[in-house]
Image 1 (spheres, one colour):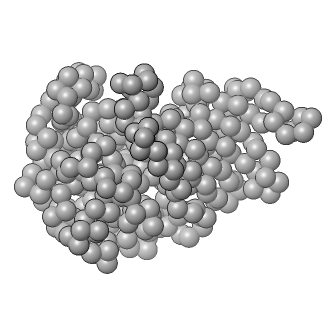
Image 2 (tube, helix red, strand yellow):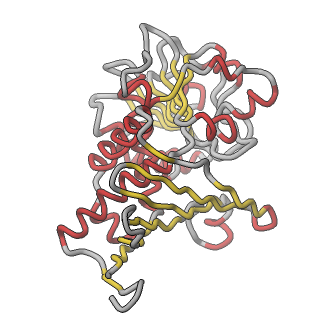
Image 3 (spheres, one colour):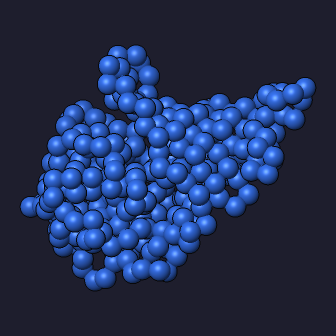
Length: 320
């Protein structure tokens, strides 16, 4: 049998943000309906190298796969490499044959941005007037692309500890540089920072705001002040992951927030099991990144690659 090899260049050429939003919404729905199998992420912490690895296996009807991905925040400065890189193995669940091995660096960025877009679709005001970005790196750009696929005629506000990064992003996107508090005072807030000190503060959050908390993906990470959670309707992507390593993990462990205050998962909202936004509430989506999101998008990429003839076939198993 043949295994298809797809590079980052291939993945970038094959997948669009519309593909990603559709695939991720499908994954959220299946997860909310209980139609997925997804063990919690396995973390391999390497503090001596300033980073960690995560293994993310999952199954949904007709497909199985695993992502091996890292988080090394100092990579750009130390090694000239992205902070996050990954490889995805897509398998046939019936035979276990490896269908494809593909770059997951761009896949990860796209599906994470798409997750924020899907959350805003279901939890934000129907016609938001402004979107604030707290953190202006790669993730902010795919979050912007996802929101542009869903909303139009919105003011874009960019804030970052690096004024240069904010100015560059604002110029690219035709937005404007603001303070963090002004970015947070938007109808939709997309926070994508790697820090452990809250930057989204209660005093800046307005009634009716929806917050996508995208940065906290490991124990100890926190972007949002704990008191914001107690005043918001909080939705998570997965119970085990969020309570262990999502935005809620620090407030939970400090006793500043109770687990039973979490409204439910975004998948349950999409599946119609629970209600999302009501009126002028503050809503918050705690995104840790689901393995089934990667799987759903990897399936799309593989199908499009086979259809277009892109990639390289190799005899990975047996004689081919």
